[in-house]
Length: 357
Image (cartoon, rainbow, N blue to C red; front, side, top):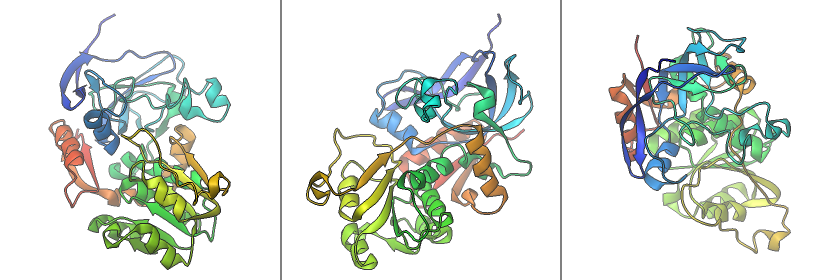
């Protein structure tokens, strides 16, 4: 068998990135090999490289957010062929696993193991990348869909929406979204679609604040103006029904518990890149008996979810492309976009890299 070389932008070790040359991945009978049409770096890439959040990795190609073009499919793949443009969720479960059959496909093969790209296999920042179980994990790119919107369907949209699912937001609920980066912004949009009454969006960056309002936030809570718990309790006239944590750190759970009513739920989709323990206030948690539920979850992957979320875009219900603030073209843009995410200038929400034909 002949192996072809490819290049990719990789984590060389903790704190260091660079270009590598590797053999193009092999395609199994149920799999696909794709090349990126557009891609985006994520804050989790920053945690992985510069915080060592998942441990050391050597010459591992980064990235899990991309729109792709199929270049090869395995003999058992039925619904995709070379040349198809596809949506690829950041989480690519093994759909015949026991975990998938039990309802938690994102943990197929072990906790968080549905997260394969740039975790324990090379990610999408390469000239080619491998997608397992192609019929279950790819979705056709809807005709005419903007690449910026499509790329956000890999992670930002499904993760933000999953936070709202985990919190079980219902119509009329008063909801807090902590952190209004791209994931939090999508949580605001999802809470609005689900019929939340008051949506308190916690953040301070001007462009994120304006977009949060456009997506449905009724109140902006700026942590620079004082303790967010005090601000929200005063505005809401007491504790809220549901909270989505899309930013912060291990101490953020303390704030969330203190402003959640008994019977309320917290949905956490924030990647905790450091810290050993979560801080839970004993008294405000009802000495362990307050019926204040915390649920943290990795977003589900899969074709059906990608297709259903794509419908929200084509129907004009959500506009994730508005989060793209910086656009780069070609492979030289990959490093620039990643470093932009690392440095987080004031005007950044999300960068995008497009590969022109």
